[in-house]
Image (cartoon, rainbow, N blue to C red; front, side, top):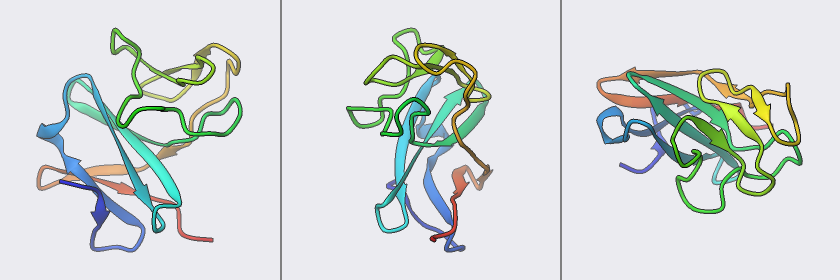
Length: 121
């Protein structure tokens, strides 16, 4: 399942929960491809963030759906190595310690991960 608009203009259906590896991640776009986000599965929980590194403001990943460290325990920025906690987006290593990724609210509805995205400007 590709990310697509759902019932609400500000809601995106990213994928089915059971399609996500544990740990695993998936990126998505919104606002006609301008906005970018990603989800991360950790056990039975899923977290959503804007795809925006708090160090210099670019996307965290260079390759599609690649947001996790090799051991799958943290989110990593592929450009400068900022390390973020999965469950709260807090930077715990690299160039921006103490800053947090921008979280997006989500829910799992009928097995599908639905993410609330920012309204267009």
